[in-house]
Length: 176
Image 1 (spheres, rainbow, N blue to C red):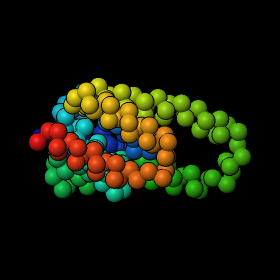
Image 2: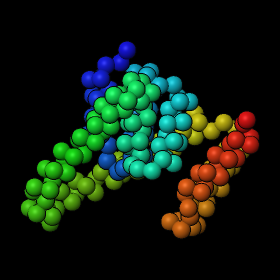
Image 3: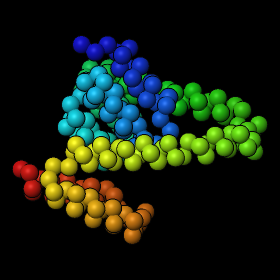
């Protein structure tokens, strides 16, 4: 049985080193949970990603909660959620106390600019990993391309919840 300390440690590490939002943590979680530790099979991991995306709230916390619940029940969900939240809370607390001195610091600005390509690379890798292991048939690639084009054309005007709901409905029709 996986210890609560091990669960906390994995999600604390992910929370500590993930910049750029919840999607940026997906490749790191996949590496730890699916590959290195083999706590979660790839199919189930992809289901957690999908559910985390359509569930209200931050993706990172949703993922932590679902994985923790699957592995160790309600207490596991609380432990993993705390693990992923705590690093951000500590960092924001520290930044808030010294932010006024760093607002115009060119070193801080340059450091943050340097993080942006890494976040982009992590997101690109997440898309690649999910496409490689999670799209069930050829039509899934066509659907993904069509949805990407819709997002590029309509941007924030597009209701992503409805798109996800429609895709889930299509999946029910195709795979039941």
